[in-house]
Length: 119
Length: 111
Image (tube, rainbow over all chains, first blue to last red; front, side, top):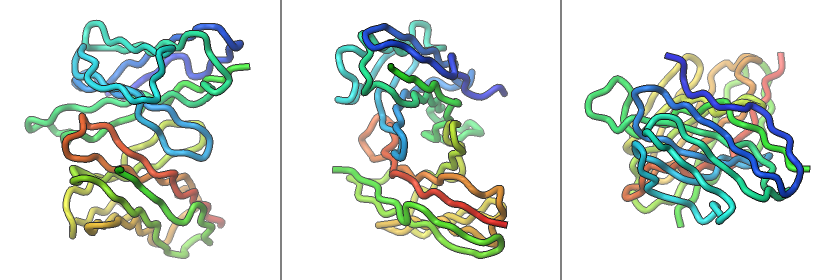
């Protein structure tokens, strides 16, 4: 089991540029979550997919943010026209939906994160 | 509004000095309470899930307990490698499964 992976691990960009992050969940997990974490704070929920359907978006997810999970496997998070306030760690997590699997329902396993710095 | 508050914000212990971290929560129906460990620059690492008041779970030097209003993470005879930020999160009934996190407790264990 390779766990949740994220790419890139670090991204430095200039204000106004677009950036895209990728998340590969644990292979048997059908749920995928994106969170954002700033220094000294806990992760904050951004959006959630079940298979390829995006089922919930936080009010934190402005119009400049878009997420996709086209085939129900990996997911991408794009930020357009980045602002300095977007600087944060972007975390991806995945979970199964229960049904007698070894992994209990709703427990989320996180990837290593992508650290974004907007200059 | 669903909310999680962790205390203290930071805790310094000597190696072998046992202590507890607190997580107080208000939520419209608790589906689960989760403890994670986070090392600097890394993603949170899952530790425990607690589902109902009175439940306890243990892993090595860590023991998590749950009441109707709060959870405790007890650390027995900590070692320097236990130094990390410990995050508490809740999942509310009726949510799509997103977690609501506290700000965490930064634990430092000195040899």
